Image (cartoon, rainbow over all chains, first blue to last red):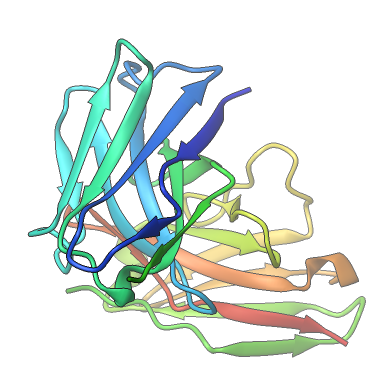
Length: 120
Length: 106
């Protein structure tokens, strides 16, 4: 059974960089069959796709966040990471990592989510 | 950018059929997934590739997609089905979510 676990600071100051890591167990980030995603949910609002990465290192990002987002993968530690620069209060959200099975298969495995607040 | 539109809320009586729609330009040309999210929990995939159910998802959940509209149908709705539901599609290598629909079972 694949499990994903997010980790990182729960509080980030405005204008600084949000950094989160998703550690994968029960499966390998090196598997060519999947991609690894970050999805966020502001308080009381809906889901927003942030971006995803393939084991090759290829990435796709939400166009509205593209200039501030970097997703990377560390195959040696079986984890992937999110960096979001120049954060504002609008970036306050629960951040989920997930495993995607393909463009049509959706994200079948999700982490429990980690809340991040942007505040001074 | 591509947009998916869902009704903010849908109500259904227990045992009846609930239908939640998701609209987008030529959505029938894309594959749609549906997620269920209960308060304080992570989303759960309930339908993928328009009509397929992942292992462990009850048969009362079904999906369809044609034209500009995809529909999630819950037959014999139970109290435990009360949740937020999100549609999702893939467009030009990006993922798009609908705004979500709150299903109330009353």
